[in-house]
Image 1 (cartoon, rainbow, N blue to C red):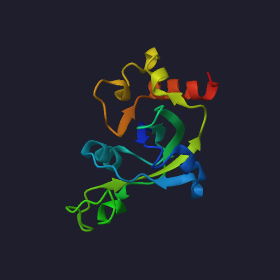
Image 2: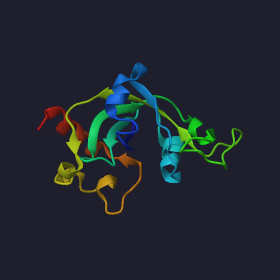
Image 3: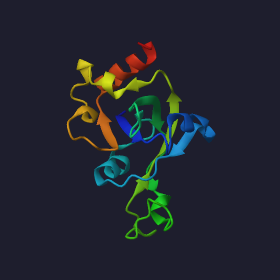
Length: 155
């Protein structure tokens, strides 16, 4: 089993939106970074753990725990010429971008980025590295455990 941190802008899709969705599952769409795409396409497996992270908001942080709920498939938004994620180079025969489905597992307490920066066990986390802007990044088993403990304890 692998663990991931996946960033979403809460104005686009929040963790509460996932909790309210049918089957508490949504498609993870709009990824337009090759490294993040490759993580979804080549490394993610059904059942992998996800730290659902709210970014580009007043208080960024981990909003909930989710899991990968599907294998990779073409991201439909790349074909919508009226949408903001349209890619004119993508074709149905050769899609460039993919999605996976994400299922909410538990909410717990919100863990702000500022607090994460104070936790010694997280100092090597990709998210906390200077210049890190990836929308999807791997999380170690130790980092996963540390964050789950914080979210579940409520401290």
